[in-house]
Amino acid sequence: MGHKRVHESAAVWTIYHAIDSETANPFQAYQATRYVDTAIPHIPVTAHGLKENGYATIATTDWLPYSWSINNVAFAEVMHTALSYFQAGRAEAGYKLLKSSVLDGMYLGDSPGNFGQISFYDAARGECYRDFGDPIGVASRVLIQGLFGILPDALNKQIILRPGFPDDWDKASVSTPDISYRFIRKEDTDTYHITQRFQTPLHPVLQINARKEKIRSVKVNGVPATWQSIESAHGYPLLSIQAEGTSSTTITIEWEGAPLHTLAAQELVIASNGKLALQIPSGASISQVYDPQSVLAKHTMGATAFNAQIKGEPGHHTFFVYTHQGEMDWWQPVNIYIENTRKAPSYTDFADIRPEKCRMVDFDRQLNASVTDIYQNEYLSPRSPYTTLQLPTQGIGEWCHPLLSATIDDSGLRNLVHHDTFQTSLGIPFRLKEKGNNILFTSLWDNYPDSSTISLSGTASHAYLLMAGSSNHMQCHIANGIIRIHYADGTSQATELTNPDNWCPIEQDFYVDGKAFQVPAPRPYRLHLKSGKVSRDLGKELNITGVYGREIEGGAGILLDIPLDHSKELKGLTLETLSNDVVIGIMGITLQ
Image 1: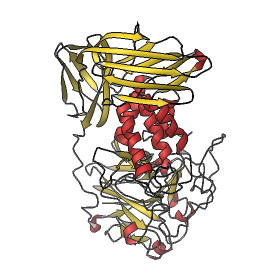
Image 2: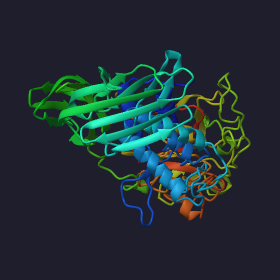
Image 3: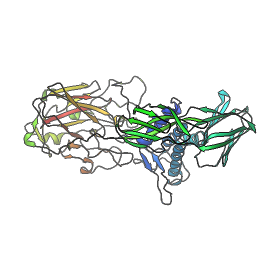
Image 4: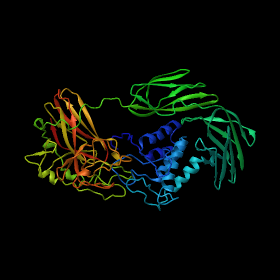
C-alpha cells in the first residue's frame, strides 16, 4: 500500500524472525545483528556488587510515541534476539545478551529465579506480569539451540551440534532426555563426548569455530576423521566434522600453529570520503572483498596491506574480506563508522525573527477541514483486505486500545484570532480563521488529497509554518510527509517531516528518557490549540506526566522554520503526505 517504501528503522522481531526462519545467508545474518548492535537502544544492566562488564539489555525498537508492545524491554524479545546472534555465528554477543537478561530478571528482579514478561528496565510497565510465562520457550531455545547448539535434523538422519560457548570456556556440559554431551579443553586439544538416547541414533555433525591456523588431527571414537569448511561471515572459519550414528560418540580435535589473525577487532571511525588502511598480519593473506553496502569507492590488496577509499552515507557499515591463514580460509567482517562531515546549516531555527518583515499568506480557499475534525472522521480506504493489526477507523488507537480517541479543541486559539490574524509569542503572525475551516489536510487516506500546492510570490529568507496532524509509532524515523518550496526559476528545495525529529502527533507529547526513548534537540516549537501557548516543551509547561498516552489537552500543532533562498522569486509550496495512516495539515504560512 502507499508508496511501498523500505522502513529502515526495524524492530528486533524483523531481525530475529528473518534469521530464525533461515531466510538470511551468513553475510545478511551478520549485518542484521550488527543493526541490533548499532541502532537498537541498549540499556546498561547494573547493580551494587555487580562487576562492570558491559552487561546491557535491549528495547524492542526505538519508536515513538510509546504504545504497549511496541517499545518495551520484554524478556522473550531479548532472548529471541540473543538466539539470533548465536544463529548468525556471533556467540560472544549472544552469550553477553543472554547473561545480561538472566542477570536482569533472575538475579536483580523482584522475583528471583523467575522469567516474567517485562523487565525492571521497561520504562512504561516496569517489572510487571511476573506470572506471564511467554519468555520460557525461547529462553529454553537460546540455551539449548544457541549456547549448546543442539539442532536435531531427524528428517536427514543427523543432529547438528554447533556450540556457542564463549572463547574462554574450557568445559561445559548439558543433558536432555534425548541427548547429552560434554566439552573439555586441555591446552590445544578439544574433546566432545556425545551420548544419544533416540530410538535410532542420528549422525552427529559437529560445527565449530577454528581456534588456530592448522589442525594436527581429528579423531572420531579414536579413528582419524576428516573435516570440511562451511561458508561463514562472522569472523571465524567454521568447520564441520561428521560421525556415524551411534549411541556414544567421542570427537577429539588437536589444534596447532598460530592463532587466527583479525584484521580489525574494533569498529573503525573514518571520515566521509576518507581513506582506510589495514595492515595484513604476517602469515595471513587476503584475496577477495565483498562490499554489500557499497562503501568502498576503490581499493587495493597487497601482500602486507589493504587500502581503500571510503564512500557512502554517514553511519555504521560493514564489508567483508576473504582471508587465508595456514589451512584456514574465511570471511572477516570489517566494521566502519563513517563520520558525518557535512556542514551543519548556518542558521538556528527561529533565531532571526523580524515581525515587521513578516508577510502572511492567504490560502483560505484551499482550507478543507477544521483541525478538530482529525479524529472525528472515519478513515475507511484504502485498507488492507487481509487480517492485520491496522489502525482503527477513527485514525488513532491500536490493537489493545481499538476505541481510543482524542478530543482536539482549538477554541482557545480561535479566540485569540483577530481580523484573521493570530500573533504568536515568538512574534510571528499567522493568518488563521476564527470560524469554519482552518487547515489544509493531506493524507493517503481517501478522505483528503495526497498533496496540495499553495501559490507563493515575492522573495523571502524564511517560511514559517503552523502545522498539525497525526503520526504513530509505525511511522517513526521515516518521513511522514514532505514540504517542497518551488522557485520561479524551476528549482526547488525540500523539507521532510519526520517523527520525532520535526513532526509530532497532534494529541500527545513524547515520553523521553534518553535510553529507549530519544529525540533530537532542540525540540520544535509546539502550539497548544486550547490556549495558544507556544513552547519547546509543552509536556513540562502543561505538567504532563507518565509514559503512555501523554495526552495534550486539546491537542497541539507544530511550528517550523524553513530557510529560503532570498535571491530567488517564489512560486509555490507543496505539502505531500508520504506515510500510510497519517494526516498532515497546514494552518498558516508566513514569509519573512
